[in-house]
Length: 152
Image 1 (cartoon, rainbow, N blue to C red):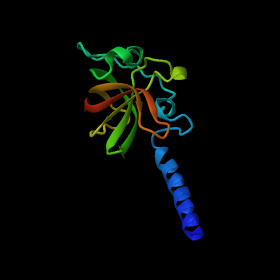
Image 2 (tube, rainbow, N blue to C red):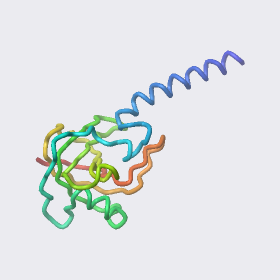
Image 3 (cartoon, rainbow, N blue to C red):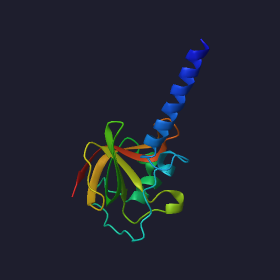
């Protein structure tokens, strides 16, 4: 019985180490969620014109109005700064448009979906906004847009 417990503990440790390495694709594990999912810092300033239409928002506006917009369609135009492919059967696309505050984590918005635009592309993303979305293991997003589609 002691052997089984040791074997189970060893398997658990190995699983935790593998999961930690894989979870780093989400961002910094220390913070998790939208706080830890910050895209790599860029030295170049980003300035992307806001999308047009009734459902159009800037990245900062999505964070400001998240409670009102929850489970509603949002459209955001931004530059793709990071893509994490096929994690939990979806691609995780980080967009920035030049709005928001990096120190508050409101300058980077994560979109999930089947499509994976390239880093550096400027796209118009459309999807359903969820606030305070908890994926477990410390991954809580203040705002995340799911079931997203992307157009150039």
